[in-house]
Image 1: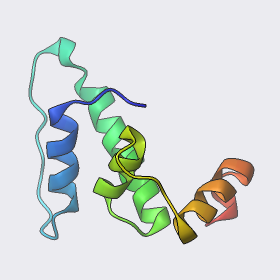
Image 2: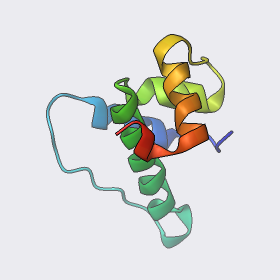
Image 3: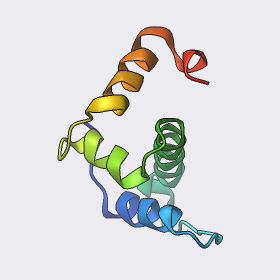
Image 4: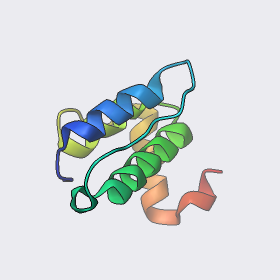
Length: 87
């Protein structure tokens, strides 16, 4: 389970918007901006591979929802054989 930060939710929601924009992540050096951006990019890449929304992937990560059906099968395939197996 990943650490929940409001910035992650905000950035994730903004990335899901149909209109593209430049998102600036501001803050002091100690807030982990690079880690936050990496987490959002990894989650959005997984969402694209699974053909689902970033918010759904986020809910899976924090335990609010659980994958089922085709998503669950793809996740198990990813776990067993890696990303190359589904691309």
